[in-house]
Amino acid sequence: MEIKNARFLMSNSDVQKCPEPTKPEFAFIGRSNVGKSSLINMLTGQKKLAKTSSRPGKTQLINHFLINEAWYLVDLPGYGYAKVSKKSKEKFQAYIVDYVLKRENLYCLFVLVDSRLELQKIDLEFINWLGEKEVPFALIFTKADKLGANKLGKNISDYKDQLLEYWAELPPIFVSSAEDGTGKEDI
Ligand code: GDP
Image (cartoon, rainbow, N blue to C red; front, top):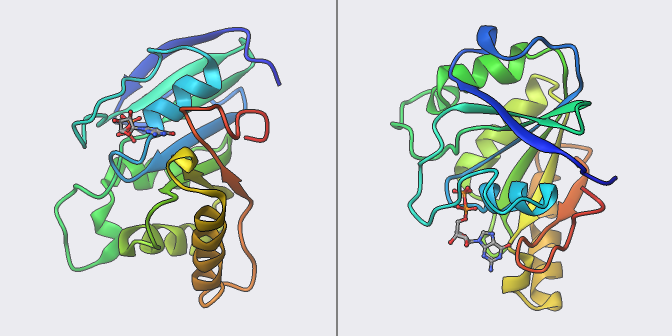
């Protein structure tokens, strides 16, 4: 698909105040610094649409973008820097939980994970929570350019094996690089 037009609509922390759910919506989430802003910019072909920064934990709002006047792309806050509480689901800000569970036009939530790292506890908790709540989601392995093909393949295969210890089925899996454009068409 060609993205001809991408523009920022609004930021807020309340699902009730998001745009009317009249268009399909695709959202992106992941641990801070996973490369979410870079990926959104790569996908939309706009260098500064989502803010990129090497300082973790900056995006703290639900950011809506309108693509081709036809669907919404949503940049969700990075997780992993919230205060740790005993119940895992409370690690994710209440408004993210609300958004994910209540946004009726959410077609797919893309969960970004760094392809260099093994399965992180917080990602596993989030993925397991999505599975329990039957939220449609897909995984994107980011920063693929930082690894050779063999190492990348092994990391993804190990990751899948670990998920299969919890789930009988795997979500759709994509590989991306904001550096060289890998994954642009597929995603
Ligand atoms: P966010 O916090 O998830 O939005 O992450 P950013 O998009 O701001 O990226 C965090 C850091 O990783 C920045 O220094 C980016 O330049 C770098 N980065 C992001 N994506 C890629 C990628 O695909 N390849 C490489 N080599 N670096 C990346």
